[in-house]
Image (tube, rainbow, N blue to C red):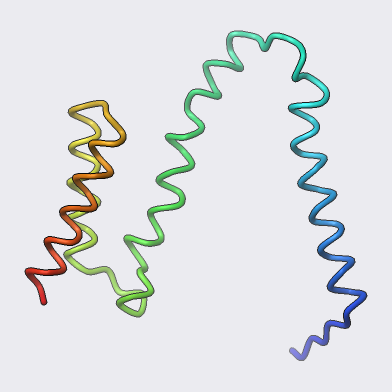
Length: 111
């Protein structure tokens, strides 16, 4: 498939994506931002970081570009340590720091 994109098409896509992003954010901030949210919405929103962070990190662990998309023991071990420390301590920063230290240590040990 040979797709050719002209400058006006590219700018149209950029403008439409910008408008879509604005509308998504405005729906929350502009329309209901000045009213208190129902308790069930606040409960659900607490889980947003817990869902987003693994979604960002999982591809970097399972299909890392550094290994041409092949999982490796260093990243898998660092992910496991990060999860374990975060789970036991209930401290996100402790999990991140321990995972980063584990990753660097494993990469150093594996050469």
